[in-house]
Image 1 (tube, one colour):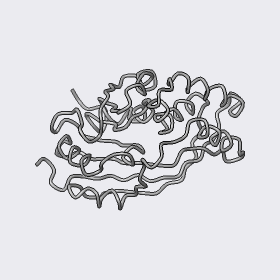
Image 2 (cartoon, one colour):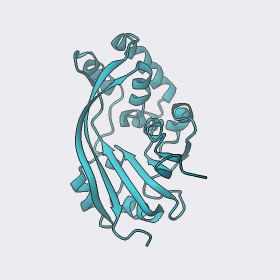
Image 3 (cartoon, one colour):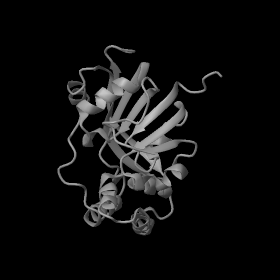
Image 4 (cartoon, one colour):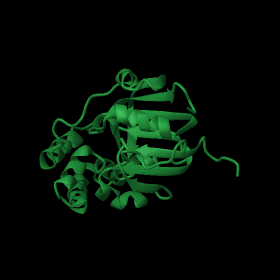
Length: 226
């Protein structure tokens, strides 16, 4: 069968509730989301229809050798053992495979209002982010941690995305403070209800532009196929 997308199979590492897996639609024929917090996956199939999801960790990928063409990681490698992850990535990537890493601080600002910043402050107070877990990454720090890979294309970006209230709700549920709350025993459905109720007066049922800053970097194995 002829390919209908640039990649045959993509693995989304640290997919959360599936928003980053949904973003791979059109780029891969088969999309697999991997998430260490199994409870985060309960809404994933509705967020990213047609994708597959599995619970697992980046340091021990439940994927066969040379089985994927693209590994994507959206803000998830800040929390893993990079050496072990890249060793696994080298194992599971096909000969011409690529690791795409992209990251950005949370989209928490409207261009024309402080209302979303104020909501986000309350969100983090109610569901605090995990302490001392994340490391700050950049294309340069990634390649220093990955001798098996070469840094290819990379770019810093600043963009505004027009999001619907529902899409923003799905997005904030992928934040690490939500995963931390779930690990502490808070029901994900409870977090979702609180976010939906408290965001309603902020968004007023309208699509709004949210500002994001970040980077993307493509890394390829130094010895593909070995």
